Length: 293
Image (cartoon, rainbow, N blue to C red; front, side, top):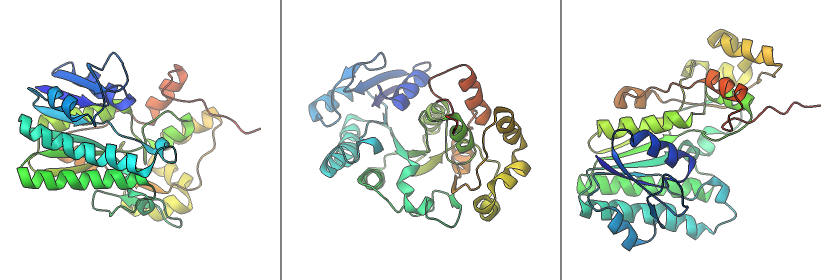
């Protein structure tokens, strides 16, 4: 399969490129030169996009303005890059004969629906987003555009809403792997599974780490998270005690990725113990814990 990957110089795009290049003919497109970039250019460049799509069977679209750009870039730039360029890429792809469009989205778009105070939120694909920023809004609008395009042109579209996936202190990252985080390698594998399955119609999936919790745990996770952890995941309790790290008193959300596991045949492999291993090996994907003095 010949696959165009946009944003292939970024952390996630690069991981997807490396994963897919083992079994597919991949083309990376990005504004930034990189070993995983074959075409240097902007996704807003329609002439460039048309040429890049020649002979392509599927598109993996990761290129976007992200949360760190909020406040630094005008709102119009988010709409141009994240919404309009996504729509144009899909439409141009249809004219070029693509058979599948995979869109890398984010669980951040659930916004206030996953972070209001007083309760631990159990987030599935059925929860209505309540965006906080233009970034969240732009990703929701892009997903909606792709839904319309999928329905209108009978194009299979798979949206993968990945949870927290960037370097941060190891104690937080380890906890988040149980509730609201994901390893970039698991993100890449989810894209591979989506491409192999190529489900018909429009499909949206949360991509997050395996959780030992269920929705019945939410009340206790908010009021006494450490007590729930001792029952549901004693291994992380032991690891935190060994390293002298503090346990949380409350966890505010859990992203449920069971639909992706069931329908895509995908299984996240890198849990909290992978975070600790990377920390001990001094891999830059994990930041050291700063102890309070």
